[in-house]
Amino acid sequence: MRLELNFIVEKNEIPIEFRKTIVSFFKSVIENYDKDLFKSLYDIGKEKRVTFAPFFTPLQFNKNSILLKSNNIKVIFSTEDELLGLHYFNAFLQNLENSYTFKNNKLTLIRAIKIKEKKIENDKAIFKILSPLIIREQLNEDKSWYHLLDEKGIEVLKRNLLTTLKGEFPEKYLVELEIFPLETKKVVTTFYGIKMQGTLGIIEIRGRKEILNSLYKSGALSSRKSMGFGMLDIIE
Image 1: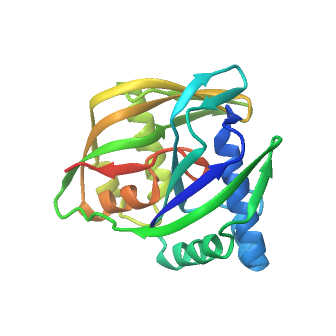
Image 2: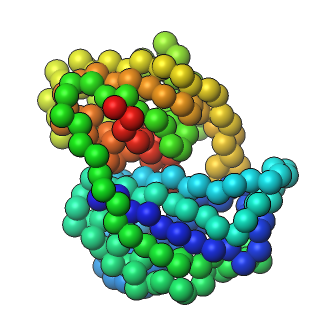
């Protein structure tokens, strides 16, 4: 399920780590909607099969904040789980026009609608990366490295996918996945004080259509997908 959320912020300045604000908003609306669902989703260590991408027009980037040209913010939300998506949708509708306070500012959801999902019918697809693709390599308990989508990054990414999707698809199909950067660029995102390099742009992925559709809907291509990374849109 894919949703479009439209917000207004009271002041046209938001934190540089605005994704944290969106995640906190999601947690707040789900907790208000169903406390048992909240616990099942947001207990520590729970894997959440959702992703999102925020869109706004920046005027100026400061060290700790972003000055916006307008007070309008759009968020595209996606989940592969239709029932979970329905719960989120109902929670959003329940919280329309309610203000969420953050950093001396207020975020108000003014519209929530379902948008049509695209469907992949072939064994390859070209995607636009809507929110940075993060490829995380865990070096030890205390240290990670974040790769770009280069030869080494693709190797790490495919290894991560084997771990993430092994319970859903046969390993032989996951091993067959091929990922090709077409027009990509490096971006650096700060998240919980950590600077992570990531990738935006156009990529091609070849593999079983069931896996390609799953990556499109769930954001599973990326590390930290539920924190607003790795959302894809289908170009062709």
